[in-house]
Amino acid sequence: MNRSDQIIIAPSLLAADFGKVTEETQRAVRCGADWMHLDVMDGHFVDNISFGPAMVETVDKATDVFLDVHLMISRPDHYLPRFIASGADLVTVHVEADHDVADTLKRIRDVGVLAGLALNPATPISEVEPYLELIDLLLVMTVVPGFGGQSFMEETMPKVEQAAAWRAARELDFHIEVDGGINARTGAIAAKAGANVLVAGSSTFCAPEMGAAIDEIRENAAACQA
Ligand SMILES: O=C(CO)[C@H](O)[C@H](O)COP(=O)(O)O
Image (cartoon, rainbow, N blue to C red; front, top):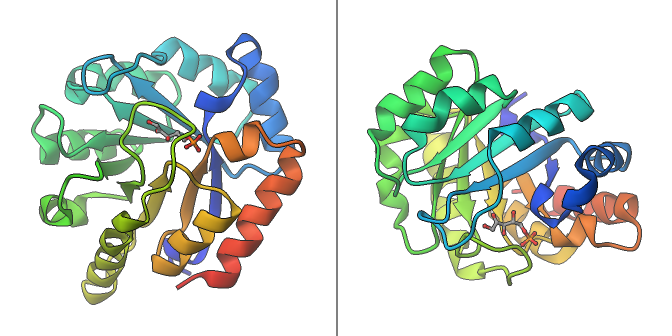
């Protein structure tokens, strides 16, 4: 079985009630979340500030769920040890950030944590090609990062298709994740293009029935999987 065979739903904490993070994490897990997606923003790499390692530690203590930590920060190499110590199972860094990308990815894997690489909508997919053998996950941003509740950019789907084609041609095994504006409709579009990890904030935490929302995203995506 390849990593890409399984649809993984990762509710984004950004859309949760920050006043009760432990309860919100437990609710997501009860409702069927496979992973929790934690968006770290530094107010410099993106135009918003979210939270740091202390929040990751709080979420880690809430359940045993896999923690997918997305660093939207300018110097991921500098802060890496603190996020690893806080309980991250997977750390994703941006190819556009100010660091030695290959070195950062190797440092993540060296401590037994999965390594992810993200690219923004404006960044060509060719920018990540040199690093495909160093990653466990490729995150194709489907909105300009910084805020939840934005609309899915379908024009990013050729990047998902190209990444899936490279993966097959080179017999690599990394997840392809999409993040931004994912719901039952857009998740299916992304799965058809080749994505298997679907980050969903507003469409899960803000749904009237979180469990039903997660089930619908998963079922639609599985039915359309490439
Ligand atoms: O990382 C993001 C913003 O920077 C994502 O858009 C967020 O995690 C998902 O939110 P939503 O599902 O509400 O679009």
